[in-house]
Length: 228
Image 1 (tube, rainbow, N blue to C red):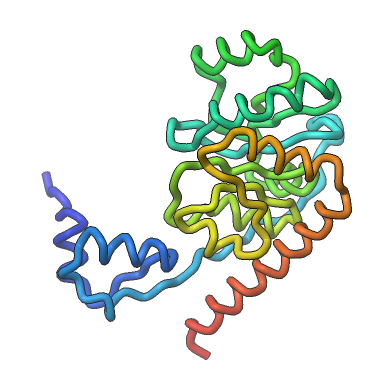
Image 2: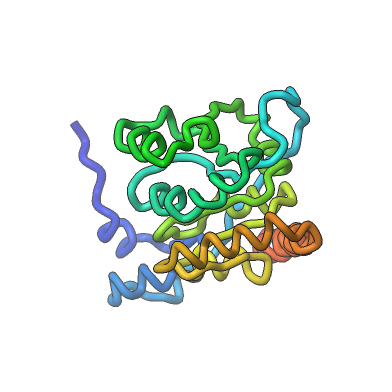
């Protein structure tokens, strides 16, 4: 059985290395300082997501969106704890968890303890439906503790959905001025940032447009690397 060489060996022997962000390039240089930084090229991810209309009753009228796996570093428990008060104060507001599988026993216990079983909902989706999940959300929240890029951030901006995320790792680079950044050590700050978007449609529209502009900038930087 063939065993693949490790990352260190591959990077040492590669002619060129593609990093998905400047942040990832810095990580490579920090962890492997002997790697020649001049052979590392930053190439941002592209995004082909589209907004296709789906069944109207599949989603509630008013919801905050969380997408994908709820593994520990994704900070899902932190998010629920941060917005519990917002949900309790508005029975028409929901937290939709798109994908990520059914809630596990710890998540179920916490949601039940908070009395939010009817407002925190996990939904499966087909690939062509995810754009609509983003597009119709009040905002998309990505409370992850660390990301090398964060494709859901790009997806959300592409679909015109305001993005709420921590001020760290590649997020500042990827979201730019389109990001509604919160202090990763403060659940109160996350709650306040989301609440501001909930009550201010003008601000939501502003960040939606900023997101579309940021997507254009990322695409332009990607196009500049492609041969004519």
